[in-house]
Image 1 (spheres, rainbow, N blue to C red):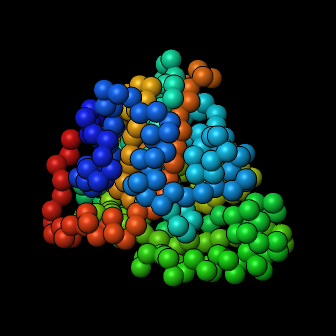
Image 2: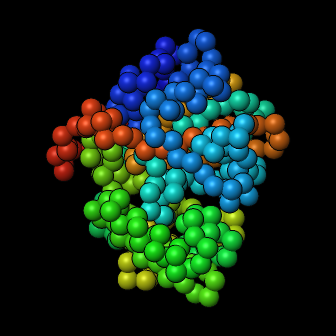
Length: 308
């Protein structure tokens, strides 16, 4: 992650994100919340959130595109934002209003570097691996996500994501009573935005050390291999061990902004006790023009970045 002390211009900021994957902006004149929002509007098409998200986050000033990060004070493993459902955002932006007195650092890990640093057998396995995320949304959850009032309409709305999926993704949905079940099939290793380098950038490490399921404000999330078999625990453990060595904590100061390429860099959080910690987040999608401007030729398959 690059720390930049003299940069505010959106086009230059995006160029640094394309180069480094994650950038911490800390100019002499600190960003205000309004400037953070304006920068996000200039960089991306912000993603709006429905009322259902209020169970996990707090909306800021009535803005459906700006929220606090996930509530609670527990640590959160490295993950790619919303990698388990269609429409994962391109960029994440974090803003520090107040850091925790101790702990509470946001963490980042470059998935390109991580993949290159894995033991060969593990790297080959995850590069080949096809995975499947299953998300069970109970009654009251799918209505907000899908803008539907019955399961059949929700399933049709989910099918409508098909034209927007990446070539390696597919999605299906069905209903189990009043629960809507979404299955997203994808790869464990995917190309990163801007330079097409292969990256271990996903949410499988959320499953480390326990059963391959997790609660997500009333939802149930499960990770499987494409054939339905559990994701190998020994692979998760091996990846987590290397990721820990490459994980970088964000040294938050008030007014800091961190921008993350969500297709290359995973993020997480260290636990903390300070209830006054306040970090905001926005996320969104690059416009085609932004992608075209910063797109690089795909790298040779045998080219890997140095492990730092």
